[in-house]
Structure formats: structure tokens, C-alpha cells
Length: 364
Image (tube, rainbow, N blue to C red; front, side, top):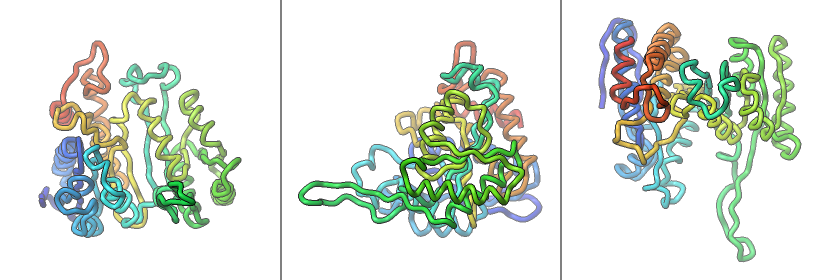
């Protein structure tokens, strides 16, 4: 499917990958906001929808069809909903939805994932932690995305001396660590000038290299403070004193785990956007999963995906003004007491995905 929002100026091509579960619903919300903001600003966009994940397996026998990959490479940015679901859990690794997600990250050279975690004042009472703990939380997880255990080789499951054994390898090279570290330090310069590098250097040799290289890169940024923290302590500090963090620099698996704690801090994982960046077109997606149990029920929280579009305007299209318009509209809807079910509390008004999206559009 191809759709144009025709306005003056250069046309920005966006590959749209709704995916599985609630993916199509939240992507529809994000596209409604994207098209309205683009039209109002005279910003021309061309949307191309393709398949990824489980729906791609069902339709094409491949979680990342060639057409999807080609369209993504030809685009200026990619918008993704979510992939996965129990339907495909019994499949072999090559036919799992998540293989498509890992594949597109690798093919696009998306070596860094930016996950902002910011507590909105209107949602402080939605967190399971005390208000005084989460008030003022504002940090970004910078996660290395194409190395570590998820991509290290050799990997697999095999018989050894008659016993079934599973194995993976956490592998990082100096260049991989250097480029993600620089991304973190550069981002910190735009924020509060502090990088906290997460590792397990007391146990893992690969993390000893990680710590050494990050410390060397820090020398290029004398205006940015660097601290090292072990991953287990980091997890503890995220729920004890989350306001101490500014930019969290992590390897792939640690970042995958730690960034989900942000959903607890902010009240719902459904509110958190992300951007995967590298040398080519960036990919934008909410950090939550496909939630097949609520798919089609008009209850999914669209905020994470809508704010991913805001990140797209800022990082890929150089329009932070349009990003602020979107973020402000979301905040105003929440300030008026409207909530999706995941962040609903006594005294708030629970509405569905479509109505929440319509109210965002009204505020725009």
C-alpha cells in the first residue's frame, strides 16, 4: 500500500511495518497523527506498507520478505508496530517473527537504540513506585543493537556426549563499542552531560573490554562525566534512585532488560518510544510487545508509537518543532484525565485507542 500526503517540498519516504498483535492498531494511530502534522506543516511524506514478523511468515513464509527489506532500504525512515505471538512460538528459529526484527536491524546497520524514559507529571500516580521516587525521572537508554549474545556465533542447540546443550556467545569488537559509546557521549552533550556505562566487568571478559574502550572514548569528551556500574547494581538503582541517571550506555542484552524497567517507572511500557539508528534509515517503534491478548479490542495504548513518530520528526527529518507539537498534544490529553486502560486510575476517564488518538488530533 502506498499513500501520499501531498505538500510542497521534498518528499520523505516512510516504510510502514504494522506487524502482529496490536501493531496494526497502534500504527494506525501513529499514522493519523503523522499525516495531520505533516499536512499542517506542508511536509511531504510518502507511506509504503510492508509485512514483517508473524504476518509475513503466514503470507510469504519469511519473517523478513525481500520486498520489505528492499522498501526499508529505499526509505528515509521506518515505522514499526510490534512482532510476535504464541501462534508462532513452536516455529524453528528461522521462522520466528523476532528473527525478522533482528534481521532488519542488522540489514539497516542499526547499531544503536535510543530509548527515552521520561516521567510525565500527569502519570506519576500510575507508577507502582512512590511518587517521590519517580518524579523527575528523565534518562535515555543507549543500547548497542547488533552485537552481543543476540548475534554472537557460534550459537545453537546440539548433543554433546549424549546431553542436549544450548549455547550462545557474547562477542564485541573494539569498533562496535567505540561507535555506540560515541553515540552516548554525543547525546549526553545535549542533555545533562553524564554517561553511566553498564557492564558485568567483574565476571565477563567481554565486559572488561567494554569498560576499557568506553573509558578511552570518554577521553574525547572531557565535558561529559563518566561512571561505570555493574548491571545488577544498575537494576537496583533504577528502582531506588532513577533520577540519578542521564544517559545509560549498555550492551545489547543488558539494554533490552533494563529499558523495560522504564515501563514500571513511567506507569506503563505502552508510553515509551524508541529509535534505532545507524548508518542508514532509522527505525522507530514503541518498546512494548505485540500483546496478542488485547489485539483488536481497542484498548492498546498508542502513546509509545505516537511518540515514536515524534522522534522520527526530530532525528530523521530535523524537525524538533513538529516533535514538540506531538509530545505536547499527548500531554494535554493526559492532563485532561483521559487514559487508556493500562494507565487508568480512580478519577480518570478510560477511553479506547481510537478515541485517545482522536483527542490527540484535536489538540494538534
